[in-house]
Amino acid sequence: MSSSKQALAHSASSAEAAPGSTPGAARGARGRGAPAGADSWRSRLYRWDMKASPYVFVAPFFVLFGAFSLVPLLYTAWYSLHNVQLSALDSQTWAGLDNYQNLLSSDFFWNALTNTLTIGIISTVPQLLAALGLAHLLNYKLRGSTAWRVVMLTPYATSVAAATLVFTLLYSWDGGMVNWVLDFFGVGPVNWRESDWGSQFAVSSIVIWRWTGYNALIYLAAMQAIPADLYESASIDGASRWQQFRHVTIPQLRPTILFTVVVSTIGATQLFGEPLLFGGFSGSKGGSEHQYQTLGLYMYDQGWIIGNLGKASAIAWSMFLILLIIAAVNLLLTRRLRKSQ
Image (cartoon, rainbow, N blue to C red; front, top):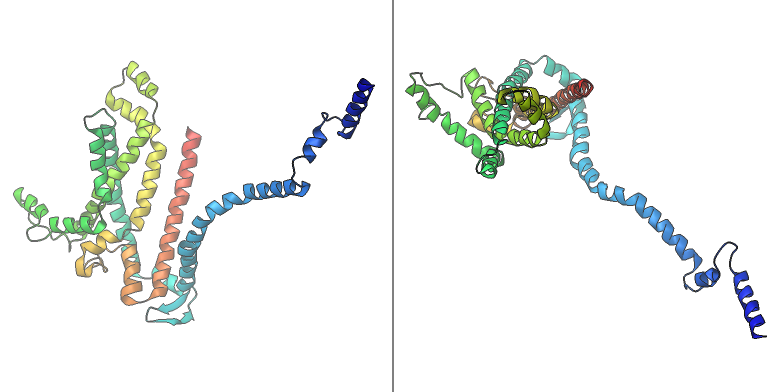
């Protein structure tokens, strides 16, 4: 009798379970004490968390970008289509493309654009060549390599005001060290602020001094990522150090070199602090004859000295279009390099 009762109890408990499940699964599910709706709510909450969390984490960037970059950019575009004076911001009159037409017919705009390109070439080419050479030297196992890297980065950490003040004293007409060295070699003193090429060279030297070490560290990081097998193969083939540099290092650094060229070109287009502080009282004009007035200085002069915010906004958008052209050229060159590799 006892064995038959146990068999009946076992069959009854197994009958309560769902088909295909183990005996006692239904009782275990009921014994958890949580209602069926709680599990569905938790699953929905988990799915929402997985979908919404990335957007929440990224949202602060887009909020700050919209508030301090996108909105001013669009507002500047609106200003560039109006006649707006700094002393009367509420009274705006529609101008259309008149501000842009005035820029294209202005000799000061073309002078500032020419000076920007000239200073950009004078400062970018020697800067990147020197950075490439310094990175090649630092790539070897030198004593105190960490200290040398810190020294390379020190000019970049120096403020623009401090660096420009020192270079202003160096290029001083009376008592400057540069003119003293020129006089030592029998060359007459140069009025660096008033001469055309002299002032542009002086401004470019400040840029070169500040950014050469920064670009050198970028090149150094790219050089250290080059596989050592390439140098070993070149050495076995009898290539000298110079040949290895030309045929191994430079081809491997092409994307990095292109990146630094684009970044340096963008920085040269936006050049403002160095010529402003170098010129002193006439810094916003780029010298007495506008001989080193860049687009950034021209925009500052029109917007904050003269007070023509509409024209200054048109200059800002002209600079933005130039940067877009540079970015497009960078994209085309990058694609060609990828195809050639």
